[in-house]
Image: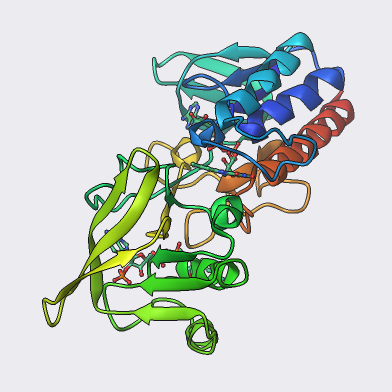
Length: 313
Ligand code: FAD
Ligand code: NAP
């Protein structure tokens, strides 16, 4: 029986592992289906993690020492994909993709979320080289420059507004002339001088060279008119898929409370509606979707796990 099963080895899962093992728990296993590190390993540069300020270091470089540090304190990594988590009486059963099961007293889930891709020509090739899904992460690289934002939801408009404080000009491109975002948000965008709203328009192609994005080929879907927009960066906000499938039972129902967008409802200690089950990082409600906050969640959850196990003993 494990003291704690951690699912996901991104910043949230790794930090949970570090705190749980340093806090005295003996049997802590992190199930990560790939190499530990999480989404940030796809990043070409990270500038906003306090204490790590090394120009030119990639997300992969950044995460390298995290695993080393965690394993030094006794965290075990099993490179396994978890199928589902179920509460069976007092304990949890973690079912792996292979069908094998593991029993655990507590579970911390940190399986993240995945930004949706649009399939636009050039998106994959220039991903991380001018195509971004995170204004907080990458906006500063375009300080004083003109950028494009794709999407008409709350995220696109909020991020466009955030970028308007950093960039000289923000071109908000949306495929319709009506927005999913709340009317108050749309109104705020309309009132922001350096945001150009380009509606009824699709991005046909993201163009670039060895250095990254150089511009966009646009098409107005009503007039069929095409145009070019020269920008060094485009932010895509086409929605997120929350990686929450491990929290579904065999009938497809969630085992804990979720909000309408499939994010896990937690309190400030990362407790879910199920005792002994914690959710952390990008998959939880109100997640800032940053490494620093995911790590904070992992620490908070692990401290709760230690207290919970002490209470049960
Ligand atoms: P993740 O990092 O998504 O980790 C989840 C892990 O769970 C993954 O490793 C995945 O393989 C694993 N997993 C999923 N399902 C299962 C399963 N069923 N079984 C086993 N394992 C599973 N943030 C910043 O603060 N600064 C930045 O500059 C920055 N830049 C970014 C650049 C890019 C290109 C991207 C994609 C993100 C960036 N972010 C940045 C955001 C940051 O990476 C995330 O907020 C953070 O990684 C979230 O951590 P997490 O642990 O919640 O989830
Ligand atoms: P979303 O509401 O699903 O919006 C995604 C946007 O991307 C839509 O405008 C969609 O266009 C566009 N899009 C999707 N695929 C595309 C493609 N292939 N090409 C071009 N455009 C594409 O996602 P979200 O903005 O991330 O929001 C998710 C949920 O979180 C929403 O319910 C939102 O209200 C909520 N949220 C709330 C807040 C807040 O309350 N402060 C903040 C952020 C998010 P169409 O509109 O034409 O489909």
